[in-house]
Amino acid sequence: MQRFPIYATLLLAAAWLAGAADYKLKDGTTLSGEGISFTDKGVVIKNADNKVLPRTAWTNFSQEGLKEFAKNPKARPFVELLVEDAPAPDGTAPEINVPDAAAVPARPPAKWKEVEGKPTLPENPGLIGGMFTTGIGWLSLIVVYAAIIYAGYEVAIYRRRPRNMVMGLSAIPFVGIAAPITFLILPPVKSEEEAKPTAVQQALAKAKEEPKPEEKPAPGKKKPGLSFGKKAEDAGHDAPAAAGPKPVAVAKPGNPAPAAPAKAPAAAAPTLEPAVYRRGETNINKRFIETKFAGFFKAVLGPAEKDMWVVWVTATGGEHWSKRIVSITQTDVVVNCPQEGGGTLDETIQIAAIQEIHLRPQEG
Image (cartoon, rainbow, N blue to C red; front, side, top):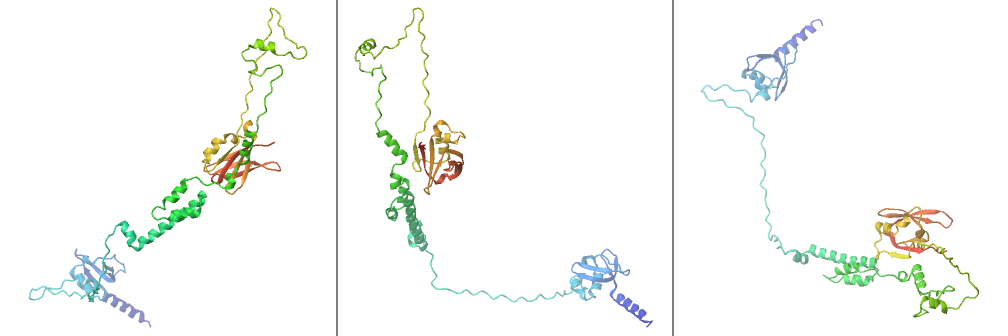
């Protein structure tokens, strides 16, 4: 048992001596030790002091060093091609043994199958000819034809025209496309309810038909035009005297009677006339409302706006009676609507949904 460590040490030393060697470099120096790592980039050598040297490239070793590495089976694959064989006795160059590359099976040539009766490419018929000679052309014509008829259907609803008439004219080949455009330009047909005069229009018509009462002259005055060719003094003598004496102001000599101050005519209060503005006849937008109803944007209404209602008729048939316009944007208008029980309520109305705007006088 005491001899076992000695035997183990001798075996390790023999193994190291068997793997250790001297490797000469091209610069004349020598590396002594055992190669522990072999790659295609070089070798890592561990010297007698158990110090690992940096990896040394194969190109730095001389032929003697490379031949020494070739004795190691692990290093032989990396140095086999770098070792130069000694020249033959007859002076010829030695034969270099290069391992044969793996044989790659040759790819069989492709076989082309001959097809009889190849299809011929169609000739270019042009745009118009291609529309009537190809399947995709006929499909495009059918889609366009159906789109024109559908456009006539939508225009008939929008302009309140007979659908059968507009769609029938749109179905005429080649010229039917003009039917939707024509009916879209024409004004819409008014319904019976829209053709009836509104309450404002009826009131205006009634006021025009009623005769005005005749004005009677004041007592003591003559109607103009009764004394033809007479002076004002003569006409005064011809007029009958009124019953009872009347006081007459007589000016004293030297003291002329003071003239009565002239009264300035009273300024007429501004008024607004009833009116109706319909979409289609009027371009109802933000600018139109700001311009036409500028007085209704004030916090305190003027005398002309106090006695008027602004009625907003929407596409759904609803009516909004308002006294004042709170605010307006490009798409909406906010109006202040009085309530029956007292108080007010701000209503938001879309400008695109407004069909009519009525300016009506306040009754009572």
